[in-house]
Length: 597
Ligand code: OXD
Ligand code: MN
Image 1 (cartoon, rainbow, N blue to C red):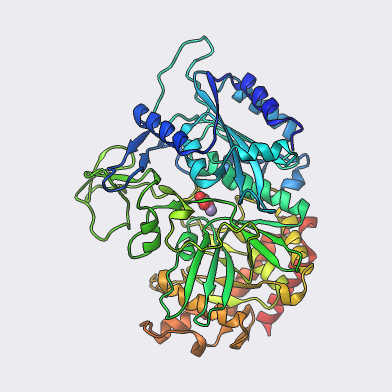
Image 2 (image 1 turned 90 degrees about the vertical axis):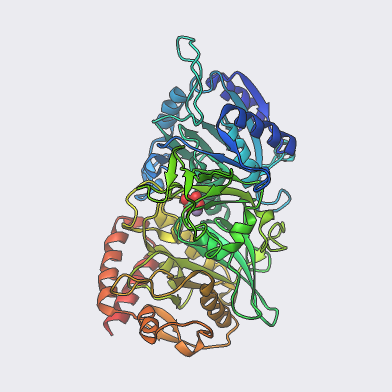
């Protein structure tokens, strides 16, 4: 934490970055209107047809600034081991020196916005505050939706609340070193990018990108990377998890958090419309959950965010009608296609493909074009309040009591549709060993299998081994009956001929129903080497046509393949050396012995 006041920090950054003007933001609709109009004027935003999508806009980024840049994301702790083998590390003093050089004069000719924001309801004991300095009005608008921007945050800070200074610049000054003025572009950014985190001082410095996860610093940077380090120090958990309430036909509520790697269907599950009679779902969050023990010895969770920053392609009236309804107005779209009527479109939105579009690069597009109309990582940014399935308690300062935690990934093979862990330690092992196919949410080769422990690989702000230890300790401090039950799910298993075995989407209700019935202790499960599987007769398949062979394949545990997986886990764990919790080795040995017997 900095010892500076917000005013001192702003003055210091202004003298480094030398903007033309400084604007203190208040999150008001007047501010939204002024900034969006200015961005329409400058060409950064296109106003969508107000008759079709009121108060909504389309932004097209630079083609080189379309996703999170994991190889340019750094954890800057004094000792490299504290960042651990899964993070890019830089020594903090050297990194600050390098960044000061880049930020020097980086806002020349631009306006510097000071955005005070709260992650979590302002009056929640779990809320944490931040102030983002940015030279991007697009970022300010996005922060309006994704966080609670308010001057009240400054009052809280002035009264002594801790806060995270979060500095952002697109790194494209409009006046060069010789004092010559340059014309602006519609998406200013810099080829050189740094997303740097200083967990020991809770600071964020982000340079060169205007894209969501790199630039909306309340999200991945504060709520996950800095948040996870704060959680370790303060005894709570900052997680890449959706949060939902499930209500059974008898009115019993279950709160479930679920971690899936980026672009693996978290938003779809968060907005699921149960297709089994009597079941209801309330959406609380689709990306991040902050989880803390309460005075009753239970874990409680809040969604620190106030909006959805969802992947557009694949979101459609069939796959996620709730998301489609959420986007009716007041939405900021990025890198989707524009229709001739002035509305948006992306692959998977409708069955019918429009004859003509302007694609995300601003060029004419027709159905026979070789490239997609919308970028695979194109996004919608929209307030949670607009979601028709929003839970009445989504904004409750005290959060919700957590009953279950799900871990998932995209696995064509091996992992059954659902497996229950034997206990908390086994659940932590399940989270630690998630393997998933890479998606377009980050730069990299789509489809490659990579380890993504707790879906936190790109988001853990400290050594992953220590993070697993912290999870073990948080659970062990709870009475066993108060610990949420942990499950592993996989909607993506495929048959030998490459077809999905499970229909997914709305049909996932059937899996969630089984989980809820297990939580209630209504039904038994069958013990296998990797955990507990449903007895097939307990899975509610009424109204679903699924071949018995597909069902069998969905739950098949192939010992040979799992032995290979266990060996890969051993290799994977080796990199953590002394930081690997002994319990993880115990769990691995247990798995091996169960597979052998
Ligand atoms: C996201 C991500 O944007 O995980 O939520 O990449
Ligand atoms: Mn995410």
